[in-house]
Image (cartoon, rainbow, N blue to C red; front, side, top):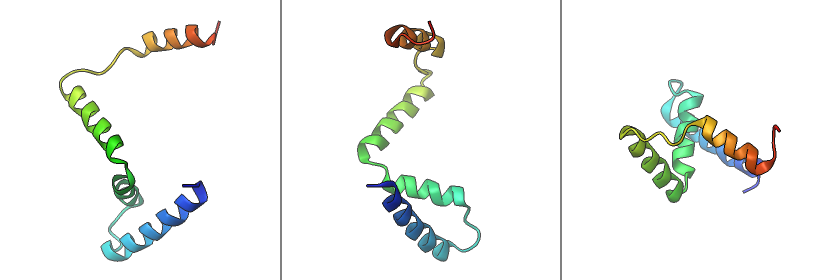
Length: 78
């Protein structure tokens, strides 16, 4: 979906949700609900799996390790 089209669809969603929820709903909450509604199931599954890993202490590899490998692989910063 093109960006302009996404903005139009989000705007319609935001207006409808604001009308339903009233003034008490924040823009952040509207956006969170929009992302929740539009997130593909595979994306949601990946996020849930990552959160489970983090809860179990797995936080991935250190950034410095990743950055060094990235720089070497892409000949950046040398």
